[in-house]
Length: 145
Image 1: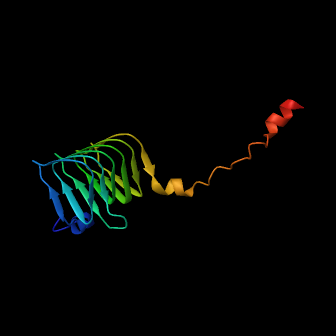
Image 2: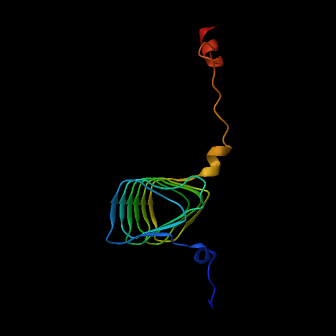
Image 3: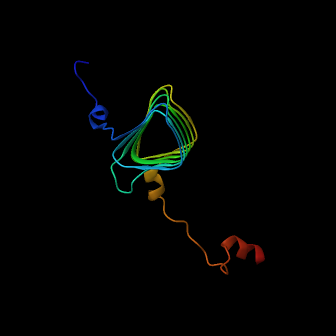
C-alpha cells in the first residue's frame, strides 16, 4: 500500500509508442518495449531472441497475430497471442483468438473468446507413433482371421 510497486511496473520500458491517432496497416517488428494506443492491422512480432514487451492500451486495437516475450493486454485483440514468458489480461482486455503462454495472469472482467494453450504442454507430449503403411493393426489382423 505504501510505495509498494509491483515487479511489472519496474520492468515496463517504452521504446516505441503508437499513439491513439495512429493506424498502421502492415506488419510491425520491434524489440524493447512497444506501447500501442492506436490501431494495427497486421502481425506484431518481436525480433527473434529479444526480450520484448508489448503493451496494448485500453483503447488500442490489434487485428493480427502477436508474438513477444511479455504481452500485456488492456485493449482489443483479434488474433492469436504467442508469449514466450508471460501474458497478462487486465479487466478491460477483449481477446478473440488463442493465447499461447508460459505464465498467464487474467484479471476478473477480462474476456477471452478462444483457448488458453500452455506452451510447455505441447513440448511435453511425445510425438505420435507412425506405423508403416503396410503394417496392419492388431484389430485388423483379428478381423481377417
